[in-house]
Every structure is written in C-alpha cells, then in structure tokens.
Image 1 (tube, rainbow, N blue to C red):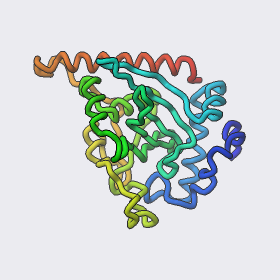
Image 2 (image 1 turned 180 degrees about the horizontal axis):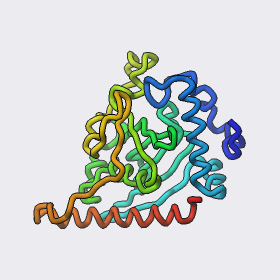
Image 3 (image 1 turned 120 degrees about the vertical axis):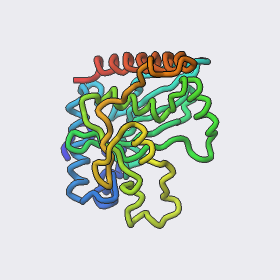
Length: 251
C-alpha cells in the first residue's frame, strides 16, 4: 500500500503488516476482503480530509475534533485517532474523554466500500469508576457518552452509510479467540444498535439508520420537556462545532 502519509509513519503501527493474517473487523471476513477494507479505509481518509490535517494526524496519531460542555462545567472531548490499539476491530478510533483525560468511550471503525463499518464500541474499563458514566450522563441531560460519541461519528461522515457489527459477528467470536477467557464481549451490541433504529443487514452486521432521529418535543410529557430541550441544545452545539471542524479540515 503506497500511502503517502502512512508510508512515512508505518513504524508507528507495525500491527498493520499482519492484520490480514488474523481475524479482522468481524469473524467472517475473508482474507482478500480484509486487504480491500484496510486499503479502502486509508484511501477514504485521504480523499476526505485536507493534506495539512492528515500530515498532522499521522504525525501525532491523534487529533482533537471538538469539545462540548454540559451542566456543572462537565466537559467532553472528542478525538480522531489512527494507529488504533484495537487493531482487530478497524483502522481508526473515535474517542471521548472527560477533562481529566479519562477515556469514556472508544469507537473503532474501518471503511468498507465507502460504508463506515463499526466493529468495536468500548466504554470504561471494569476496574474504573463506572459512577463516572452516570455522572456524565446526568450532566448531559440524559445523553449517554456512547450515544453522544455516535452523534459525532454521524456528524463527521453524514453522507455515508454506516453499519455495525452484531454480537454474533464480533471478531472475538472467531475460532482464534472464541475460547480465550480474556477475549470477551462486554457490550450487548445488538441491543444498542436496535435502540438506534438499526436493521439487520445479515448475521454479521446491522445497517444503521441514515440519521439519528430526535423525539418531537410536542410528543414528550411536559415534565420532561425541559430536559429534552437542553439535550437538543447540546446536540445542536455539537453539530456547530463538528461543522466548524469540517469547514477547516475537510476537502
């Protein structure tokens, strides 16, 4: 793969060279398809963003997209990362952290035939303070960190279809990892994707909706309208910030 940015930085991501020989993205992806997905992912990124942005992204490995503030001065920060440390689940990460740089969400994806393919969605580690998630959710008017991270993905790549791995399709259910205790799925992917209105594409992937819809404010019980109004205000501010990022860095 003769990528003008990656070839200068391949030493930062040695796992790339062995990916096609291991389970990748989902447990049923064939070797030839793995290679095509990996190559198309970097071509997509190069076609989507300006060279100045890509040069810095590949040099640093990570780039801040934006930050957003909820109540009680709670802040969330969103980053695009290459050289993912979840290399079996894709090529890139979308990461959400708090202001202390605690990672709340890490979404891992690749690009398959111009379709965003999500193969990993991790939250905080088990030994970390899960009360933090509840605290953040409360300060963002009931929006879970995973949901707001997905909102960022939709805003970044609004014109592209998105699909997401199912429980049965996850890479850790491949024969290589299926019986290893430390390779377990701790997320009910099916439940989460279905809650967003996704439809089954096949046994391996869900096809995500074209847009993440909002409830009509008039259909919400009056005692909850204030919360939803604030929630939608947060999402509108998020859209403005991602739009500003894209205006600067998108081709």
